[in-house]
Length: 283
Ligand code: GUN
Image (tube, rainbow, N blue to C red; front, side, top):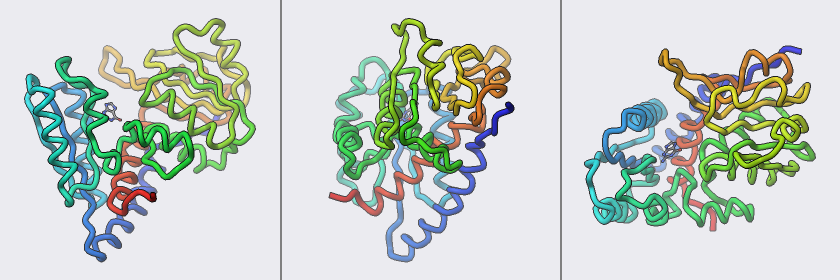
């Protein structure tokens, strides 16, 4: 069976069109959604991600500004900058691009961002609210994955979802969101024994490992839905995921490609969260 490809790019485009409309409506009420991004240092990948976010905001009518800070800036300096944005009523969303230089504690930075402006969904209050099912900012990549599955009417309730990878940004929260949708969830990671034996039971398989070809035909059940979250750069400069796409597409019922899969959805959900921030979280 050849899998149906879920195009994140096409879905992202469609959703961003709808968001443009929402932003115009907010503008007509005197609300101008704004995202402030802090970029510390000059990591080329981070710069490129930040540029992508800035461009996407512009296309959607969302205001954005990028605050660039020196690589050797102190943690205190960065926290002070965040506090300033917390108090600025014209700023609805705050995003500090990760990773940060080693003199800065990442968790301290995340904890300092007001949870009401935490459009990344990384703040412990938002993580807690996500777990209890209260209104929260959902982390963008996991939120994008669930949105992709729903766009294809893929039923999640009662399905066995296997998540390979346990990062705070993707693996852990995507498992929680699948659980919220009533999936039976199994997490696998670098210490998991007999990986293929477990992944072969997955109706929905999420690969968030960060390793080329970590998931191959032998890991996939016939008819499974395969979501590839990996973004790995090959020596020739091209991008590839964690899944051997050519092998997997022969077994899966649905598959997300890399590029043009989950990636464009991550930024799209950031735009969605920024619009939500402009409206305010429910209590
Ligand atoms: N670095 C890589 N991915 C992300 C993300 O989703 N948010 C932030 N803030 N930094 C990142």
